[in-house]
Image 1 (cartoon, helix red, strand yellow):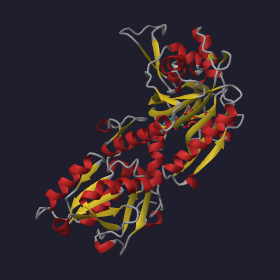
Image 2: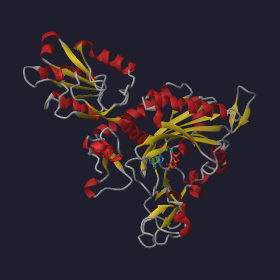
Image 3: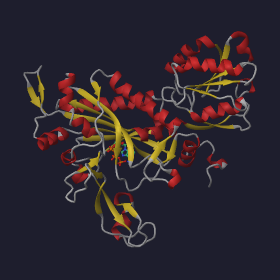
Image 4: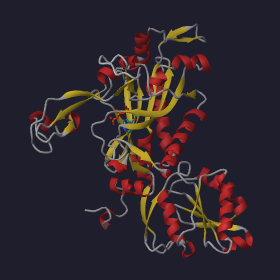
Length: 465
Ligand code: ATP
């Protein structure tokens, strides 16, 4: 059944989200005019604004609001020994099977067990190959010559975390951080994923927001629980629907060889519950391995405690930035019947349904749109002046084309929390209407008070729908 059918009205589906994302310039397929590049996506004007805001919001949460966390931006290309020490060369593999008949390739852990045991292709019934390991790291080489022996091979980092571990000593020495402390990093990561379906959920090129928190052994469980609480509270603060989030503890079959305990925060995406972020107690595995492989002493020396030495434990919070962006679009997506709603009849747009992205104003790509009721009679000039003033503090949009109801709908669909409309009364007394996306309510505010009023509204924002 098609998505536009009345059955699907009011529901978020991946088809609708993907189509809205393209139509409104959030996300485009990479290299689309050449037929597209699977596993890669481009972020359009609204998408990059949203991505930057999510990143900035996370960065603020981690660094500005935590005195014990500092930032880092490490290189994507690292010494190849890093990936031997981390275990990625040996263990970062997916189990793969191929169908000999239709040539389809599957992740062995993602097809039904009965297909695997009978070696039967879930698509065509043909015979499957044995399961083999496939390393997910992208390999390239440094320098102009590709050597046969791989001696100049390097990898595109499959996670940002290792850049943090190898800089842990540099940061202690340069920033005088004392345990417990954390290092935050946002950056690109690359994985040669076999199955890249579900839009930007799983891609070959993506971004991560990771924070690695270094603690004294024995205090790790306490810190692990603290970070679980903090990460949960973070999503609450962003106005995410909390009944669409849950914890999933890794069972012994999922737990990575280095992890002492691991939980994922899962979100109820339109295609089901899926991992959004991992909060892991990684024990002292990472630093012990890097000490062993680099030959450097990576022990922490606790000068306040008789120079006690130990290899710190690491509590990791690892979220996908691009996956968070998808989650926030899905979470914000709403379709609402609006017949006869809205003040002064200005909500009439010829359609009694509206699509609205209920983004928290702190991350909405455009904070405020300024709309002159008419282009003529000096209203456009006044609206442009108001926009000019608001620009200093907010991301703004300006739209003078078409009926005002339709213009509100366009802003709703982009997730713009506030619209300012300049009308004839504005010319008389300097007041404008401030329209709220979620409730569609309108109030009159003097134009000189707009910037401060918006600041208050953003601070006090609570999602109600
Ligand atoms: P999965 O089991 O889904 O492959 P993972 O457990 O390997 O993921 P981690 O290595 O813990 O994922 O990565 C941390 C976070 O990075 C994930 O929670 C996710 O948000 C994000 N992430 C990982 N792989 C991808 C990808 N291929 N595309 C987009 N985001 C990803």
